[in-house]
Every structure is written in C-alpha cells, then in structure tokens.
Image (cartoon, rainbow, N blue to C red; front, side, top):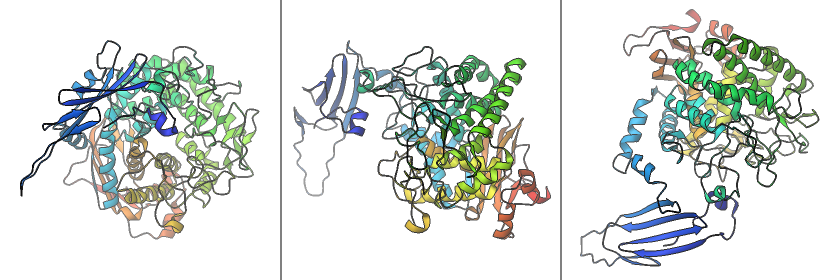
Length: 609
C-alpha cells in the first residue's frame, strides 16, 4: 500500500514531484500513510476487520480455508486532516456524516421527500431517479461553515462549493429539492467579498467562484481559498433569492440576506463596469493563476471571433448582461414587496430599462440575426455564433420581435445537434465537437435554453431540446454527464462521451428537473402553482406529484395529444404564450390553483379551458 496525496490540481494538470515529504508508520493492526509540508499534514490510516500483519509496505493476511469455507476481510481507510497540534479537522464532520448502516436510509429519505414522477417514459423515469440520487451524493458540508449542506459542483474535479454552479443548480431544482437553496444562499452570502484583493480577485459584494481546501490552495499555488474570479455569480445570487421567494414565500430569508443582495447589485455597477459603458466586464487581476475567462465558459479559448481570433481584455459576454438585467428587475421586486424601499426599486427598474436598450443596440448583429457572443475591449462585437444567446431568452432581455430569429439559429443545424444545442456553432473557426466549450453539448446549458424558449412561447422547440437531452441520458445509464460530444445525432446515432467530463455533475443532474418544469410549464403565481404543459410525443404522459411551495403541495400532469399533426404543432410553435394555449397545443392538463387530489382531479383540454 502507498499514497501519493496528490492534490486535485496535480492530478488534473499532471504536475510532477510534490514539495513535501511522505512518511509511513506501522501501528498495532493498522498502517498509517502520511504527508507533511510545513504545517500542512494529511494521513490515511488503513486497518482490517480480520487479524493482519502490518509492515511499511502494506498488510499481510495468513489465511487457511478448508473445502467449502469462505474467508473475507473488510478494509477501512480513515482520512485525517491534521492541524499543527494534531487535532483532526474532519472529526466534527465525521460525527455528522451517516455511517454505512444509515447512508442508504439517508438517500432513501432524500428521494422520498422529493415529488413523485409518474410517467409512461422509462427514459424520463430513469434519469429523474438517477438525478435525485446523484444530487444526494453531491451534498457536502464545507469544513469551515458549520455543517450546512450545499451542492458540490461535481465529481471528480469539482467536489466543492462553486458560486455559479451551486446557484444555477438550485435554480434548476427549486420544484423538486428546494431545501438546497437556503443554505447555499446563506453560505455564499457569508463568503461574499468584503475587500479588494487582486490575488483572490475579490471585491466588496462579489460572490465567490470557487472554494478549495487542498494543498495547492493552502500554499496559494491555486487562488481558490476562496477565489472570486467569476462575473455571473453576483447577479445570479439575486436571481435565485427572488425565484426562491416566489416559490416558497420565505420573506424571512429575503430580509436576512437583504444587505448581501444589495451588495451584489452594487458590485454590478461599482466594480464590474471596467470601461464605464454600463456592462459587466472581466479581466483577470491574478496574472499567474487567475482565470482568463470569467463567464460560465471559462476555458482559455472559449471566447473567440468567428474567424478564430481571440478578443482582447476586458471582455463582456452577452449572457452575463442578461443575468444583470434579470437581477435588477428581480431586485426591484424584492425592494418593493419585501424591503419596503420603493425608491430603490424605481432606480433598479430604470437601470434595467437602460441596460435593455443599450444591450440591444450594441450586441445585436442585424445582418446575421443573432447577438454577439461578447464585446471586445474597444466595444467591437465578437461575432461568433454560440449557445450563449439562448441564455438571453430565459433572462428576458430579448425583444419579442427578435426572438424568432434567435430561435432559428439555436435550432438550426449549425447549433442543434439533435441531442441538444452545441456550445459553439459549426462553421466557426474554433468549432470542435469535442472541444470543452467549443462545440460540445452541455445538459445544464440546454436546460436553461429550453426554459428561455418556453418563456417566449416556443414550446415545440423547448420540447425538442428536452427530448434530445433526456434521450441522450439513456446512453449514460440515466446520468447526464457534464458534457458530451457535439456530433450530429444522425451521424453517430448515440451521444459521444467527452473524455474527462465530470459525472455526476450537479447542474447536469439539475437539468432533468428544469426540463420537467419546462415541459409541464409549472410556475408560481402568488399563492398558486400554474401548470401549462407542452410535451414531446415520446413522453406520452407525465405527472409530477406533491410539488412543494407556498401553496403547500400541488400536482401537475400532462398527456400528449395524438389528434394533432406535426404540421399543426409546427404552426403553433413560436407564437405568443396566450395564442399557443388557446390553439390547444399538445396536451391535456390538470386544473390548478389549489392542490390536486389523487382521485377525481378535474381536468380540461387546454384549448377549451
């Protein structure tokens, strides 16, 4: 037995020899493998359930088995993170953690508390169940934050707290696992930036990007303890706070986090507008180890012109401006209805309106019919076609008369693979169907795009994305990975694995929940749950039972109508929400407004209701 104690970044980037020293201690009935670097110390203590001889190289068992007999032993590896005084930092968490006998019950309780999905689709049922279990597995309690449970971003690379990832995961899962949201908002609020620090890229009001505890973070070889190099987590913090209140009615949490929400909104204008043009920009201040790109596509080459050139810095990506617009409107609602500050609400609404006009002037490429991926440092539009434009739909910053042109690109062959929308369109110079952000399909990305399509009344297109993503999950045993290849569905016949994709990944597990919300058309309205479904034909019938919220618990159900042709459905797609409803799209729906009963629930064809 041996242990290299490699930090996650050493594994990911194949870094060579370690700076510290290894040691081995033989103890009664157990072997201790250790690593020490200055005051940083980690150990793994290995023991066995049966008599064993221990030496510095491992464990040795002397076993005599008679005919027909069996022998087994159980190995246990106990991990220890030691302070200089020898106290194990993990001991407090170990007391809280379920042991092997209670862990299955803990997961069962988590699944049982979630709404029940009842559907004819075996694929949809499989991915829903798998996603619930994976979200349970990804819950963790950060060492320094009092044992509160939050969603880690994903295995193996991102098993820690991320600002953007955790916020978006909570947004996706509000109808199913709303208990994830309050601790996530509280913890991110408690770690909100309070000073200016160029190494950590911290600003007052800025929500962190990533929190790490490993060796490279401890010795500042990676600026992740915490690191603030993201520009979208701060507006998304306000977006989630508002959406959670709309679902839960929990005004107490909104009051509790008022100052944090105000600080996040202030960060947008006071610290993020690096060029004084009214946009959120980014440029890394930590030159040695900071992130070049601080949007959700944060790999080094993810933001480029159509001809492959990389823009200069600072950069302003399009979807981040949409988040800022949404955050200002949602902040205005909270200010007016909860914080009793109508002047602040009025100011935020004026700022949102000005951003709306400015954005639609500067980012829109009229000759191409879509929005630029970003603005270069001098204001030049970065003209490549990407999935980012889909996020603009769910943030609501797209004028209705431009939506159809945007959707045409999203669902066209350059972006839509048949499994989902690619991160980068075919025909762009840096397009690569196995490029991390340059042509792969990300389930989380597609779930928000589908939500945006639904917002603008493009039900058929949203259903196509849901069908593609959820069908792809069947090739991954029901578990949606972080990303998969952007190859055309008709060419490969199955989704191609991305070699180093995280799996499970929190916002990929959450994608299933948001796609179900989108297909069922469920939304909170005052103290009621509104349901207005539009299903793809492959799912037949879908019911989500006991959806929690300020209404108590309610049910939503839908059935695909086989008495309409594909031509009729296509004709309905893309019309306004009201007109699509009135023309009876593709569903039969449960009447909502009060929680539905299991027996005798009233129902009506949508076109007749």
